[in-house]
Image (tube, rainbow, N blue to C red; front, side, top):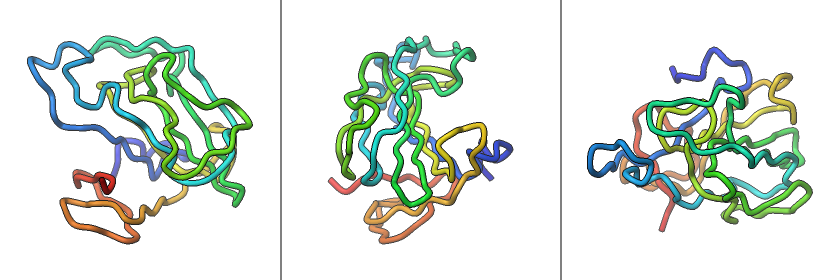
Length: 164
């Protein structure tokens, strides 16, 4: 079970981050994930962007805007991707932009209700978070625990990465 299971829109959510932390992990820059590129999971049209949240310090949370900086992509098939916690002022797309799988959307940050730099990702059946139901997301051509997988729904604690 994942930490997001109780939220009907986030039932199948993933949090992507690196476990590599230097120093004592007290500064955002100590986290390898902080500032890393975030790519579009699939083709679509950008339907919503929030990019005004400030990155919070480790141990703090901004509960006034839970997702922090966020991008929602309409895949035009009844599915919307939600990516959140982007770094302040790093989002490179705007509403109405067309995006292709692999396009850079912005940089990983620590905005919103977050414990450390990471990107939250989930797939849902509606553009509105409050009305949406979460959908299972399959990933193709990714590394899972070092092995290439074609179509997979990663499980909790598996280590996943894009092909380089």
